[in-house]
Length: 281
Image 1 (tube, one colour):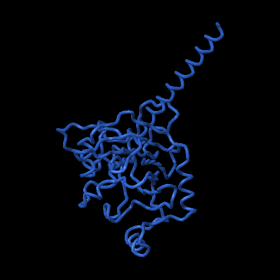
Image 2: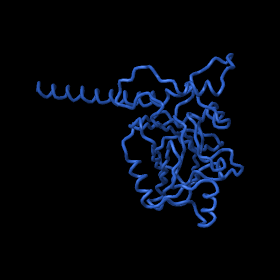
Image 3: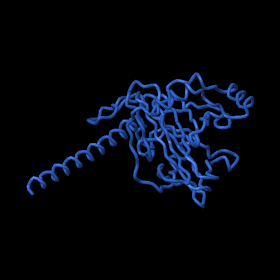
Image 4: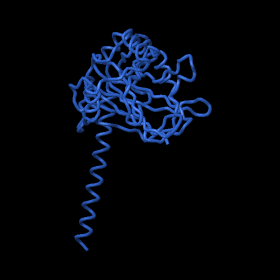
């Protein structure tokens, strides 16, 4: 009997230690991502020039980080995102990415990179052929350059066509995946600007990557990353985020955090791929 109690005691210690380590890693991920956000400034101080903002972005964090996560270094690529669902009164409410959606549901996704980078989004439905969803000339005139901690949304709420302001679930059950790529340099294989227009006009469809390119991208998506996930959903999109999206302003440290934060395990990596699975019942 004594040995049984000792065994149970050791198991309890192991589980508690593992949970504490997991919590520490999540805390480290958030710190590594948020360290390059702007600090809250005194509203009476109007000296907030772009050069000052850039200087702040380049400052290194001096805080302690004793976790098995990337160092607090803005050179490490990180990407945060939140899925918002439209309510009956047209409000945006954050939802758990693992939830199952139904026909008639509408969502919008906001993204926040922690470095200046280029964003590409590929769409796959039911393991079919992948196609390029973003950049798109109808969104931001095809410009896919993203700035550090300046949030943006897909689709855009500013679209003049209300039906294009949301991803709308319809039809039969499906498994849809978004591959969101944050990269320091433009992907040479993906056409840009007028070349993207010409491809769409010629093929009457969105640009589709080659099998070799797609295999490489999926392999990159399978590489280990560190992740922090919120457990708090059902919140309305904040006014701070809405203003930052509309005016293309950097989020400050006190702004709400993304629901999901992914940080590359390699500080020298040029590319991070976040895979978002959207299940429709």
